[in-house]
Length: 306
Image (cartoon, rainbow, N blue to C red; front, side, top):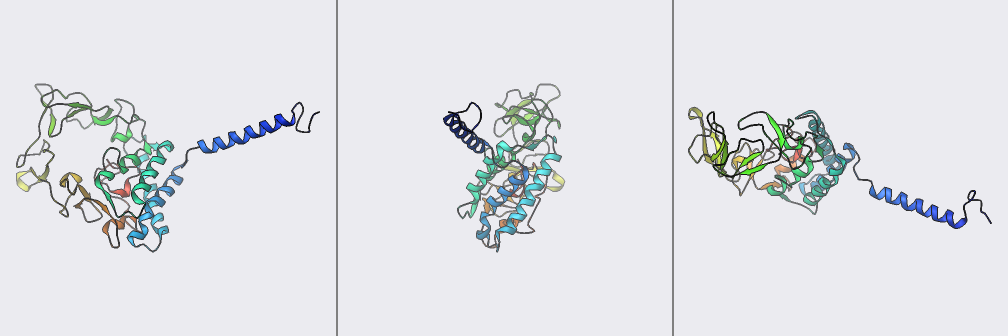
């Protein structure tokens, strides 16, 4: 006996087919990645960041979210229009950024340490990958986020060259040759170009030595000293003026622009905190030197900063 389900289909077969359709639909819904576009990503990111609204004493989280959405969308535009101009929104990387923001800004957070803000695997690093480039090996770049391969760095084509390309970094010891793109000299050494021999890793400059054309060792900063040029000097302590993170001692390694460009351990949140200004209505939207600057604070972390 046939049912009215359709020609040639038994009741039991119809039920099995219907169940399979529901399962397929459910699996499809579960497998679709969240944040399909920049708008949904920026909305979620703003909501995650503005979990600090009450800690900062804001009367409304909504105003904070409006501010942070605006910052996020500005960053997205910068990522697409600067550097190699190959960076595009990458949905597959969005959830990792949102998860990291939730982890650092949630649970009544009062501080985010420098190590969680800056460097490989940090908040800024993870969120920059949301806007990924497509430059292949040996193609021009202006930041590592222009490169299609996440393992590549954006390096000079040769020592001292302003032209940059994507290439995998390779550690080089002092005294070894470093003329290849991607060669990275050990800590407190640099790749010294030469007109007579191949470029070689040499010792960086110590305190009191000139850094006009040569970098200082990691414990020093290169400071302009008027008529005498640039000289290596000790890094400065917490609450001292800075221009970049490289000016600050390791105990307070973050050059905090919200606090008036002084060295701090990281971002601090609380009623009246200077760092809350970047999340308040009308707060800081840009942070100085472009979407891939190492001194950029959390205001541009979605698409930027090294």
